[in-house]
Each structure stands twice: as C-alpha cells, then as structure tokens.
Image (cartoon, rainbow, N blue to C red; front, top):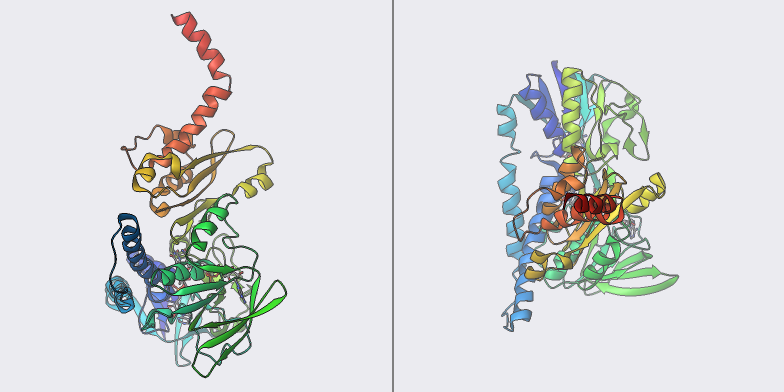
Length: 476
Ligand SMILES: Cc1cc2nc3c(=O)[nH]c(=O)nc-3n(C[C@H](O)[C@H](O)[C@H](O)COP(=O)(O)OP(=O)(O)OC[C@H]3O[C@@H](n4cnc5c(N)ncnc54)[C@H](O)[C@@H]3O)c2cc1C
Ligand SMILES: NC(=O)c1ccc[n+]([C@@H]2O[C@H](COP(=O)([O-])OP(=O)(O)OC[C@H]3O[C@@H](n4cnc5c(N)ncnc54)[C@H](O)[C@@H]3O)[C@@H](O)[C@H]2O)c1
C-alpha cells in the first residue's frame, strides 16, 4: 500500500493549492480527483466560464449602447456560439495551469476516482485501491441544489454544469434563484437577446449586501431583466411544442408562464455523501463539514477546506484556506484562518463589492461608535468623463479611522476597490489612503476622495480648526 504525508481529496481551487504547496515544500502528496481533468467547479463550471460569458455579453451590450448613443444601426444579431467558443477557449487556456502534467512534475501522485474514507488514515479510490495518509484534506466542493419542484426533473433544465454547453440562446429564459449565479447569468443572457425572468423566493436580491448598495444594483438590473420577488416555482410541464410551462406562486397568486429554457441556481449542496464520513465520525452540520480555526475537522489529522466547510464559498477563500492548511498540516504550525479581510464580488454590471462589516453589522457591533464615508460615482471626474457614473462607494470605520468594512456598486469595482483591502489587511486607517497619490483622472480616485472625507470631518468638525486659527493668528 502506498503511504503519503498528505492525501488531498478533490482537485479544485482548494485541493490544488494544498497539493502544489505541500509538494513544493517536499511533502509526499496524493491527489484524488473523480473527474477526468483537474480544476474543479471554478475552472469548468463556475468562475472561469461565467466570467468569459459575462465579458462576451458586456461587449455586445457596449456595442448596442454605442449604437443608441451615437445614432447608428447595428445589423444582425450577436452569434451566441461565438460566446460559447470563447468560454471553452478560456477554460482550455487556464487548464494548462491546472494540468495533470504540471502537478505530476511538481511531484504530486494523481489518482483518478472517487475517494472514500475507510478509516481516519486510509482512503479507498473507486472501491478498489487503498492509500494511506498521515494527514488528509477534504476539498470536494459543492454542486447545484435542485429544489423539489413538481415536474422539474421530467423536463430538461440547466444548471451551472450545463449552461455552457448550450448551442443556441433561449428566447425566453427562466432563472430560478436570484443569487450571484442566477443574476450574473440572467444579465448576460439578456444582453444576448434572451427575455429573462428571475424567480427569487426571497423578498430581495443581494440581501447580504450593505443597505445602500441594494437599491442601486436592483435598479440597474431591472432595466435588463424581470425579477419576481417572493416567487416560488410550483410546477413545470412541457407542452406539445416542447416549451416549458411554469406555474409560479407570488404573493399567494398562481400564474403560468411559458419559457424555452430554465436555469436552476437555487444555492448549493456540498459533495459530502460519497466520502464515507460515517465510517470515521467526522462532524457535519447542515451539510457542511465542521472545522475549527485551524481548519481541522473533529478528527484532528483530517482537514476540510473550500465550499465543503461552508465558511466562505469562494475560490479565493478556498485558496487562502489551502495555504493555512499547508502551514498547519506540513509544518505543524497552528495558524488560524481569518476571513476578516476577505472580500467578495458579484460580477454583474455594475459590479457589487463587499468587504467586511456592512453598516447594519457595524450598528449591531458598535452601536453609534462608528463612521461612514460615502462618495457617489457621479462625483468622480473619471466616471463622469466615461459616462459610467452609476454607483457608490461607502467605507465604514471606527471613530479613529480603523477600517471595518467597504462596499461598492460600480463599473469594474473589483479592480479599484482592492486598495482598501490592502489598507484593511495591513491595519492602515482610512486617512492613510488620502496621502497616496492617484494619477488624475483614475477610477480609483474615488477611494482617495472617500478617504479625504475622513480628514475633512476631522478638520472642519473637530477641535483642530480652533487650534489652527489661533496658531495662524499667532504665527502671522
Ligand atoms: C457559476 C459559478 C460561478 C462562480 N463564480 C465565482 C467567482 O467569480 N469568484 C469566486 O471566488 N467564486 C466563484 N464561484 C465559487 C467557486 O467556484 C467555488 O467557491 C470554488 O470552486 C470552491 O472550491 P473547492 O476547492 O471547494 O471546490 P471545487 O473547485 O468544486 O473542487 C472540488 C473537486 O472535488 C472533486 N470531488 C468531489 N467529490 C470527490 C470525491 N469523493 N473524490 C474525489 N474527488 C471529488 C470534484 O470533481 C471537484 O473537482 C462560482 C461558482 C459557480 C457555480
Ligand atoms: N461572483 C462570485 O464570486 C460568485 C458567482 C457565482 C457564485 N458564487 C458562489 O456560489 C455560491 C452559490 O451561488 P447561488 O447563486 O447558487 O446560491 P445562493 O445561495 O447565493 O443564492 C441562491 C438564491 O436562490 C434563492 N432560492 C433558493 N431556493 C429557491 C427556490 N426554490 N425558488 C426560488 N429561489 C430560490 C435563494 O433565496 C437565494 O437568493 C455563492 O454563495 C457564491 O459563494 C460566487
């Protein structure tokens, strides 16, 4: 039987970080992946294809916007298959980085098949081969949750695992679930000419965002797609033409709609069932593997990272957790995981950026002892010049300027907000950004303008003006 320092189950964002990090440091590593290629959800069905499709849809939208604004006509319709080809090209390009060859060269032994625990040190692959590991990392990710809707399974529907194999753009598209997957896809399909309806069970979209961000992004998205709130899809049937006839209950009223395709994006289910956790007694809560601050499960030589632990289901978090596990499992360091400075972005247009506490979180935690500083895109020269002036940046700080959270809706916010993450991670106060020189005119100047507000408040509302007035009088 082969024995390794570390066995990693799942070759996605988290698992690959651990496997490459540990092997580079000299540990013997086995990586078990059930799919034929490495890369996981993010590369094959998640971040990469969705962002490639969003980019294609954005280009189409910009062309349409230009035609409207500059008074010319566009001929023909955008070719949907070109967008899908670009999606496949992006995956193929990035696959090289996540290739079996690259990981084998790094010294990782790759096993193809499903990994199941036999006991706390032994994993069986496809019910055949058994390997032994001193430490084992579970990084098996998640899959789409399909709600129990009458008739849904009998008609064909799409999830993030099948959207990118579509050959033609659907004319009428229903998206069940208005979370990040649903909304990013809904807007992009609309930009290719689909008539899109989102049926969201809850009373709002972007419910976890800061209260000032929600109305802005809602208004922008509702220009392109229809959103039904408090809407439960009750029944789906196929009619003689092969169309999908859908009954949706909204505010106690049942209505029937007809669509060509349905995307289900109603949350995720963790890939937990086939791991044989019952053989070893790893604690699970609400479908997620329970971990401590060191990312250890209830069995200390077994770690769980990425979507499977339910903490922070994003690729960059899986990567960060992977690094913590490499330190802890390979070097025996007791490094704690910390999500305080971990942002997330929803890549709608405009983008929605989230870092740390929202204003409501700050109220709950600090009462009145915090400050907010806000600048609208409409007050920033570069956004005005670009005619992309919809949006807002809000920074929430302690009274002394220590950054608690930062939130934005705006074109390409994912790029220009990063400066605040840098400041927050390094314990810098908001005022320090005011001294950083930003070339004129950049989008990132909005961050500096927001930081300037901190000094303006200090200078004009505090005791400083009285003191400086006296000083200037005396100095003259
Ligand atoms: C449409 C979509 C868009 C997204 N966009 C973004 C984004 O823009 N930014 C972002 O940060 N996050 C995004 N995410 C989330 C991101 O994809 C996940 O958070 C990330 O992939 C989680 O990494 P992971 O390592 O936990 O799981 P994965 O990357 O899914 O890897 C798990 C791997 O384990 C394998 N596996 C499962 N069970 C077994 C088993 N028993 N034995 C062997 N192998 C097994 C699977 O085949 C898979 O390869 C998106 C997700 C979706 C669905
Ligand atoms: N930009 C990004 O970083 C990005 C993009 C896409 C996905 N992701 C990751 O993937 C995860 C999953 O995304 P998601 O959008 O599937 O899930 P989600 O849980 O974030 O949102 C699902 C939405 O569907 C709704 N819903 C649930 N059941 C429903 C039903 N029966 N009918 C109608 N609505 C229903 C929920 O109220 C919720 O608003 C996210 O948490 C995120 O971590 C990240």
